[in-house]
Length: 361
Image 1 (cartoon, rainbow, N blue to C red):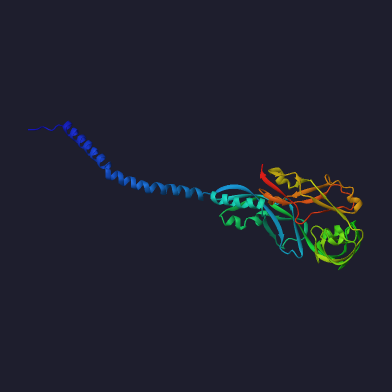
Image 2 (cartoon, rainbow, N blue to C red):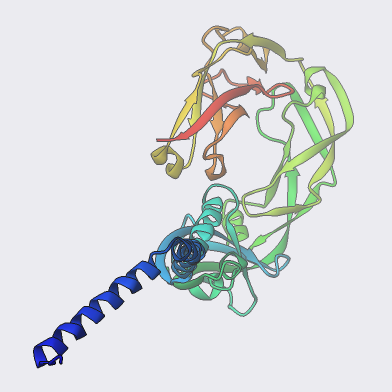
């Protein structure tokens, strides 16, 4: 006869539980279970990573960027619009959106700084005036650059654009020859007057200097190099700033006296004219001497005073904001640095060029 004591029941109970645990562990770590679990993890882990990436891309972030604008008149035939402030058209914008969207928008905005400014079409609701405010955010926020990337513009600095809005008007101006044209005895123009169209303030400023006149551009005319009468010569007109001319060219009857002489000069020093933004942030690499000969024309006595190896002229490379990162050749213009009276610079055809690189500092 076997006697069962409480201690024997307890011993049997724990031994059974231990055996069951061992069997469970063995079943969990069989080859088949390990393979099945590995396959499950192989599918779950990449999916989890993808969810994390998408979630991070969709998370709203805030950042700032710069954009350059230009203003356009919605009625250019009757109203002139000029941006007074910010003077260079550069605005800081606060952006909100996904990181990917903001990165793309910043790339597009960089193009407005160095290439094409964002155009702001100024409607006709603002009255004419010298300092008309226009809310910057209203003009910027709806641009497709932002909403196409799911990005919102939440603020702008400055918060208002300051514009000069003027009515355009027409006035009559007489066509005249430029003063001191070498060899020119007389000039008669057909028609003798043209229409000058521009802002009222600009026309008033011109009128305060005397009767309104428009100068004929006689630069480089072959007729000026030979004595005699030359009728029906087509010439352009030099329009004052912010003014258009109707028509923009006329014909001239010219009488020329003593024929001019020419001289070839070389070398000529080279200088660069650039906006402050480029000068402060970019380095210009170019040859400071133009070796291509430049032709000077004028009266024989004046030409005789010129040293062909040290003529007082400078070749100028003119850069603007769109030339940031430029690598290539640029045509040059010329400036008179003290030539004898009556001598003119012939730019040549084609105009001389200089290789230049515009690289970030």
